[in-house]
Length: 359
Image 1 (tube, helix red, strand yellow):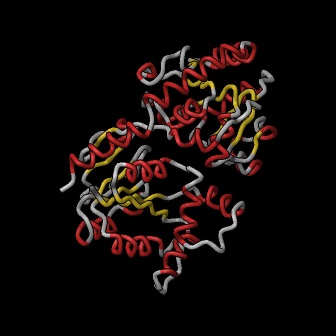
Image 2 (tube, helix red, strand yellow):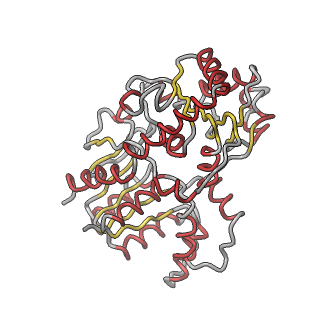
């Protein structure tokens, strides 16, 4: 069995929201970290849990949770303040103490170069990274054994091996949520930015049709949309939902919408995280069609797809009127997700990639 360290960076908006809504002052490092991970934000929580279930010693470090990292420093009597400027030094001290066999780093490009070279020379040569987005040019991949990705199209021509690891859904989330009543007709939960022009244009078109649409996003309303001018989406946008609150929002939705980010659509990538989250939570997923989607879910039986804005309008209207058919597809989608795309399967693929390259 291996000692594995997973290194992640969480959205600041999520961390701020979590701290505002939880009493953390009296908790020690271990207690606060477990409380945070028990909210199931992001894939790294499930990676940690499932690696542990398979008998590995797996730790998850969150480099930008500075209140959490400060507690670790205090408990180890290290005279240092956890800040954005010191976060790499704190993580290095943690790695020196943990002495992992394997280090897996999320899409945190500031760690490439000197940091990973130091890890390679002093701690472990078995460094793996994750990239599923366009990355900066001239990254130093020399210390990296392999790059994992769900979007190989972004990583052509790298000097290091690339392995595909698809997204997944954690069945434990369903147990954690319990029964959730359907109270939202149509939802969209996710980002709206200059990288999501197709998404924004499509949601605007639905709003114009008076579709009962609920949008949940990390939106600082007026200022956020200033670059796009006057916004019809502003009035219906609700605050972002994170972790279990986000999963409960999806579970409460009769229909939830998914749009691949523009750069992924242009690369003809299919299979973003929301496809698995939505189906896993039991919403009927209505998603933009991309080639190969049939390899993930069966259209019109487990999910519903659209190829144009007009088709989306028609299908939203249809399935809102045909609730039983909508429910059957949602149930079939959830069954398919849990059976074919669970972390119990994905973690075996992940482990096999590690074993293929470690020394």
